[in-house]
Length: 404
Image (cartoon, rainbow, N blue to C red; front, side, top):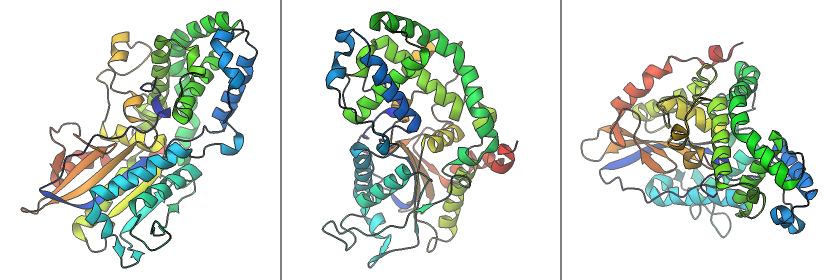
């Protein structure tokens, strides 16, 4: 179960990263999803409703655990980072500082941060918490405040109606109007195919009327308990192994349509302004290294990272996922959020300079691991190659793309 929680999974720690012996890091741009959090309001309602339903069942073998269940899903915690989420970002910051010690120290001028660092978060408290936790880890023992010798870091945030970089969906009228109904339309046959049989079986076992929505709520509660409580002995007991695989696929497919390859007319250019900003920062560092941004951190959401992956062509299946996707294709799919889309998932762009030839290069990392961009067979490519990969995609215009 721990490997099938999709977008609700805890951050997966990276393997040890290979050293860049021949290169010096000149700039890092990091885009990260917030850490593990309590459910948003709709999720809180769903889990509390699920508990009320299950309390009425007489099948103690299946739901006996509920008698001693401690309900942590209190509405005052809605959307907030839990302790795991706080640690995920803090420890990520510590790893970043350990990998890039000289780079991080160069961001501090005596006892202040230089203007060559930019930290931004979306409108939500969980992204602001995440950015703050990362900076606590990255700049621990570098400042002068408190026993941990931290340094105060300014964190900037735009209103959600005016943030096309980190929260593009909130300021895209076309997406706001069409995403939910279009996703529901494409999802309906798949939900009927997989969830109705689960609802019928659970209805018989629990001796209760169980609807499709109830099954989806039970699964959300299951994955939340795995992430927040690290237990599979509560809601997850309702499901067979096959149920979990099918429900994981449904969650993947929902994200696939709502934020990614499933609906190209809605999602293909959602990361347009973000990628333009990334390339602009690279250009400024290339041309004006003394004043350009050296480190740029953006803390956002799945809605930030999934369109960025779409723009880069990552985790794209050869055949489009749909109601006609075969069981074999589902099993072997690349678009599996449990492998890359969990809490605190991230993508980084490093601008490198070869120590001897002075040639500039780019390395892209996903979840702190260097990756090969589509069409390349190595993780470090020249800046010219990166431009040739990115620039043809930048004919996009976010404002016109989102117009109704």
